[in-house]
Image (spheres, rainbow, N blue to C red):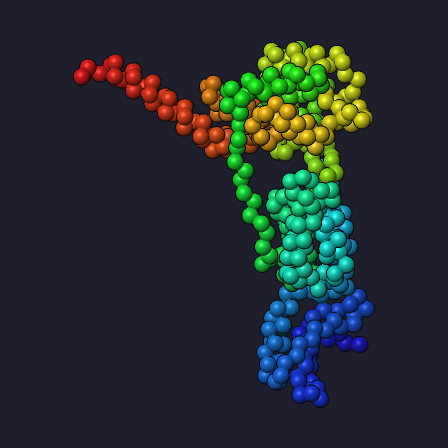
Length: 384
C-alpha cells in the first residue's frame, strides 16, 4: 500500500451544515496515517485552517512516540540525556522535581500537552507543593522552587521538540513567580558578640558547629557535608569538597559543591583550628557534624536551621537567616581590610566581581573612610 504524504487530507460537510477537514500529520510504526482534524462553519474557513496546519506540521515527524505518556518521556530523558551527562547529585535533585511533573502532567500524552496544563502545574505546585507543612509557608513552596520546576520542565520538553516529537514547547507562554533577591541582614559587631556569648551557653556540639560556621563563611550544606578527611590540622586548613542538598520534597543528597569554584581550601583561624581539634577527639563518625539519630549520616540542614532559630529566640537576638551568618563573616572581613579577590576565594564565588557587587554597601563605607583619610593627608600636604 502506498504511504500517503504528510499534509494530504480531505474535506466533508456534515448534516448540521458545518465543514470538517483533516490532514495527515504523521504515521504509526505500521504505516497507518495519523490525522489531525479541524472544523468550521464554512468551507473557506476549514481550508484556511488546513493550510495553517500544513505549515505548522511540515517540520514535525509525528510518530507513536508523540503519543507516549509524558511520564514515559521524562523517564527516557533521564536515561538518555540526564544520567550520562549530569552530576549524580544534580540528577537526584532533578528527580525530586520530576515527581511533581509526573503528578500533574504524567498521564497526558506528549502531543496533547498544552500551555494551560503546565500553568496549572506551576500554580498548584506553588500553593500545595510542600509535602510537610511549615509554620511560615504552610504547604507552599518557595518561588525559587517553582522556577526550578519550570527550568526542568522546559528542558525535558525542549528535548522532545528537538527530536521533532512535538511541534513546540508548551512551557512557552507560561508565567512563573519572579524570584526576588533576599535582602542581606547581618549581625553588627555588638550583635556578633552577643551571638558568640549565646553559643557559648550551648553544648559542645552546637558551640563547635556555629563557631565553625561564623569563622569560615561556609555555606550551610557545605558545613553539614564536612568529613574528617577534609580537616588538615597539620596545615590548619579545611577542604570544602561537597555539599548537602535538599529537594523540594525534603529529600537530602550529598554531592559535589555548588560550582567548581566552590571547591576550595579555607585557612582556619587558630581558634577555629583548636575548636575542630577538640571536636575530633570526641567524634566516632566520619562526618565532622553527624546526625544525632545516626552517626553514619551527616547533620541535616533542617536540624541546624531549627537550632539556629531557637538560639536567636532564646537570646533575644535579631532574627536573621542561617545564610546571613555567611554574609556576616564576609561583611566583617571586608571591613577589616580583606581584599575582594581573597574574600571571593574564601567564599567560593565564581568571580570576584560577584563578591564586589554583593558587598558594595560595605566597600562604599570603606571608600568613604578612605576618602576621609586621603583628604586629611592632602590637607596637611597642601599649604593654603
